[in-house]
Length: 100
Image 1 (cartoon, rainbow, N blue to C red):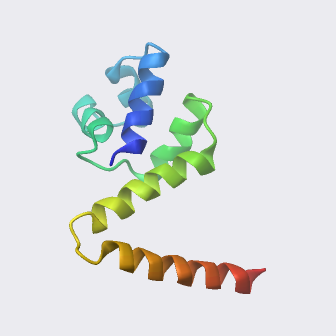
Image 2 (image 1 turned 45 degrees about the vertical axis):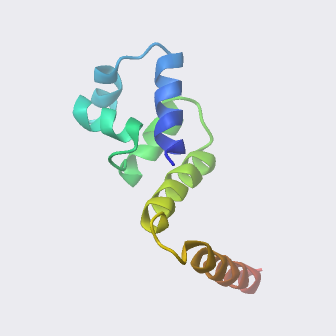
């Protein structure tokens, strides 16, 4: 799963932006950006705001993709991944309901 990187590559190519131009905006080297787009490395949290502004994307949507990719990478090879995610979802819902 690499929804975040796929979207960044799509938007960059859609705007005909070169890797070197976007990497300069993010203050990272082109190799790192290429790895982020391929899902081999994770973008830093602070890059999300910059990317959202550059590509006119909703920050919360982009952040959700970024976070989902990280969660997936954490559990993808775990036999009990779905069970663990269901437990975590239940806990998150419980916390959210308490806040309301």
